[in-house]
Image (cartoon, rainbow, N blue to C red; front, side, top):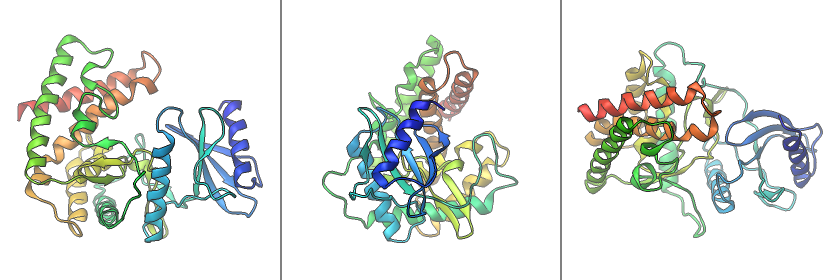
Length: 318
């Protein structure tokens, strides 16, 4: 961990009245997340947001949404306001800090720690949780200034997708670019029909992968809304299962999350039919997402690319 990050974490804590102990880095992915104990002995998570990833309005919007959800009883870490009542603090010219409640429990897994067995119970419960998230969100009245990115057709397949132009990523051969461009064109037609036939978009979590779902004594809690944005609800479900896409129990987990979600929200035939398409779109998006985040020449970039090519070819063969 850089001493600079530690310095700014300590500086940020002053806006919340100071801490009993030095902030301790617990995760550094998109954001640097520190465990802190505030002067009032409240345990919380301090986030130093990745410079340039989200602007102030987008971060404030995330805080507004998660607080609104928490007030309705949804299991989500609620923002902790600074001693001046602010949710978002500018601690340097390019670093922004937020503070959220600490969540007890453990993540249900991560990219390297698979869920044991079929995973049917945990994914069924996650489906129920995401249905509750979407239901509560539909009932909220959002402020005029609310701003979040898109996971809709434009956000996934438009000229400037949320995570980059996967069909033009560095390291692609001419043939691979051609495959991804064909996939993009076909997928756009599929989603346009899906939307024309009545599919709606709403505010999604956008990243309900294993490490963002905590299991505690009171059940599941959804954390890390950093990638929340507007899209088709089925994208949230597909994203939640994506780390199992090469697992032998993948289809069981897809069925379980759809069954859990369908308990409290209507799913159409098209939703079931397009679930694999949204899974593929997530894989395509991450093949572009990983490039600026991995070391140049890292094997992980090729792993993501090969997975994307595999899913794209399956889609084109349908």
